Figure 1 (cartoon, rainbow over the protein chains, first blue to last red):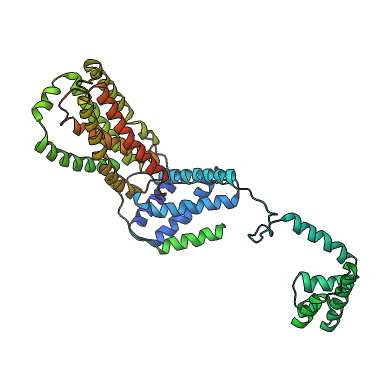
Figure 2: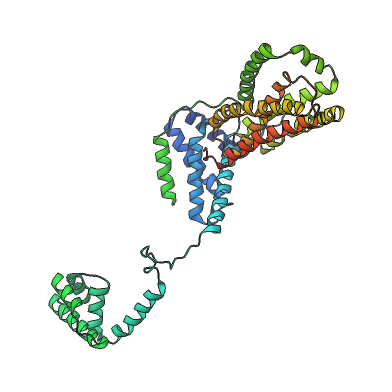
Length: 205
Length: 216
């Protein structure tokens, strides 16, 4: 009895195509190489998800695998199947990624709230910075809103008079008057007669 | 990293593609390396060794078995190293040299039972054994460096097992060649120093494999 031979499965067809493209790649065929890399990328991505559940890290592994394939493409034996070779590279890079991430996690702490400061000990004295903020905030809150917003825009956020005026909808002249009055009010609140802040700000503008 | 940057990477890799020649099968590369070493060793043995002494030593079956086990350890370890340097070869190759290594140690151990500690006149035998230690280490280190250079062509993804297996192969090769210049049966001190020499070579190779830059 003659039986029909089984038609090649999709996986076998894919393996055959990949092996053909890889042989062409080893011969220097750039078009075949790009076609191969695009074709294997979903396969690599799917395997990489076993090691990285974060999509961004998965893509890191995918790109690492593609770079490794490029560097060691001469180690694939054309007489052997291509998929196991590619899968082994992907597994190795996935494991390397896990080890690297756990090594980093053991030695580093990721703090989104950490702020950069100067290197000197005084600049890294958080208690001093906190005390300064705590001292100024009640003073600013005591100002009329128009003056407070003008002072925050020009003196704290560092906008130019033109930018601050545009943002607040005032004219530059009106903004200058608001800043001037805010500084006078703060001076009265802290009990000092010095005028260095005001003269620097208005002269520079 | 986004899929878009992956697409850009593919375009970059494609643009930079150059043809490459696939490496020969690992067995072929291993035999070529072993053949080159055998040629050099044969020249040295023909020039400096006493083949009559070697032949009379190996007339005893245990000695012949020990000699064969040393050679088999060297060959299997070098072949294993070439296989391990490739990504799609089974990692079980790292265990291939262990059975002949065990046979080598066992047969050497029986030799020690026969000859004892071998201390002899104070310092004399230890002096001979220490020369064996130096022979194995000094022959192995440059050979290991050369073998590492050959194995680097495959840019192994796991350098450490490759380095350890390669070093064991080279040290066993040196120990095998030593037998042509070893005028007496092995003693406990000989065995200890031989194993110590192999340990030094493998340990140094392990450090190199573990701390060296990733090759691929």
